[in-house]
Image 1 (spheres, helix red, strand yellow):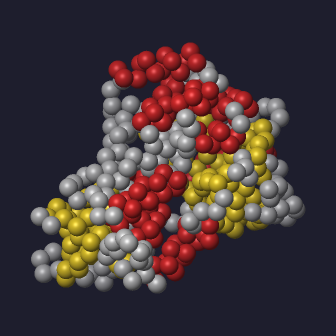
Image 2 (cartoon, rainbow, N blue to C red; image 1 turned 180 degrees about the vertical axis):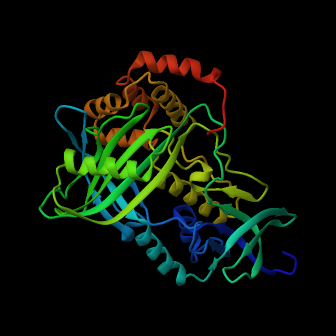
Image 3 (tube, rainbow, N blue to C red; image 1 turned 90 degrees about the horizontal axis):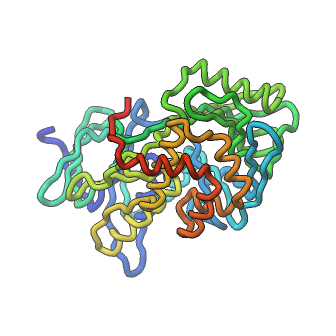
Length: 400
């Protein structure tokens, strides 16, 4: 790209997904007594590099930074075992929150438009290279123009082209419909977190997921944790069975749909890939391996990075999840993948015997060692211990 126009900034953020937008949002505007770095946010143009609309869920107490983009929230959750009665619980003071990506993008875009220090550039990031003064990002605009972006720090939130080698990698893959029913079919105050009344696959586990936004409206999803994704017709058939035969929703209109794949892996995710280049978000290990939840982890990362930049410190993104949490997740993933534990039975037992609020804090890595041990004693101890013993001897292999 010889002769490309050069733009300079203190920080370049690559990617306009949840992680990139969150970091740009946290860096926007002046704060008394703190540095105000100049920021260039590189957004991929419409096309295959820009993901479609999607839903992010997380839990937190009270009001949060992005509540203006929250579509709905619940303090009451339900889990349904394969057979028998439902397990219900109040998670106060926590709230289970749902954000639609288009609402999030609109809220952040509104705030960034007023920011004196953040600029947005719609372009494809072609290469990232180290320089004596930091790093350079070479980009191509939709009209073919090229720009070289020179920055002290670069934060790359783009998905990895391939997953690092791991001892265990499962895929959390799902297909969901936003539906409107002809009759009142949903309890607006309760989210169905896991409904194991779905047919279970030969490898892994499956469950339904229902987030109601009104008596007639909800996001209804079919989800699997397994080594392989389904065909488009396979997802449609599984979701139709769940809506018709399990939930018995009756006549409904599908207003919108979403499909996604989240790797659940114990592979190490390097957050630093150069002296001045870092990864954030899912590519930087923000996804909790045992659950697939990412939004809360990337908020911890971007909050810490923004604080370091404003204080003039080296902004290395922190690990989104503790070593203890990642170790427990590695054991669970291996136990599920090897078939040593029955997934629906395990999760149903945990939600039956552990208060939901505490279990959610455990899943978010917010519990003490004593609380972790109290949760662990409700798992199949023998199979989990055998898995923990064998895990260090297992080789890491590329995911195929």
